[in-house]
Image (tube, rainbow, N blue to C red; front, side, top):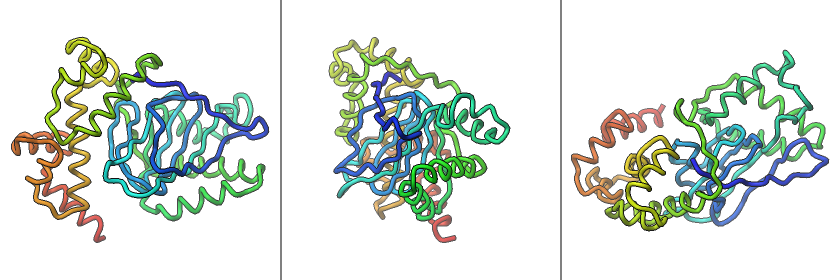
Length: 286
């Protein structure tokens, strides 16, 4: 993915950066940085982009991103109120040179290596995680560092899933950042309408074929596969949070053909919309 380089600013007196992001929306563009990043969403919902992963996020979303892995969070247009997240960022030398080669830190080393593909932690105990992270932020500098390293060790033994596919390799071309941002913004504003390739390629001043090659090379997937992933993620949210008919959800997400919607849903979710909703309700009730 072509992404914008972000300079992470932190105090020279601190081993890592711990901050609370709170604003009207998540306005950081598609970007990357050498630092690892641990992000917990306290408030907000929308679509999370990590490498070639496209998933919906909401309060409780908890991810760990490896060095130079492109990412951004885009708010849902239905999002109301402010957004808030707890963010930790640090370099390889947080405990000095070659600290991860020590036997004591092999679990953390393995976790951070996996984080190069992006990690989503699957624990449902969101309030406990939020409380733990908030306490770490409020400790004295020494205790903050020690508690953070202990927390990474605990995470290395927890349950998680990787986000990007095994064949994903980021292409960090800063000049292409504006093109990617324009495509994201256009999709967010027009996902419920018919999206034409010529309109999107013209938006970034490229021919249709050149744009398709550019997008395929960037994400290892075609543009319209990306569009359908986005729409199906929104459809999942609607299935979970509303009582709308499947046909209405399909239409609201930009599908003019119900059979095509069903095929795309089966492709990305490996089940039908109704089965997906039943499984969610069953898990929620347990």
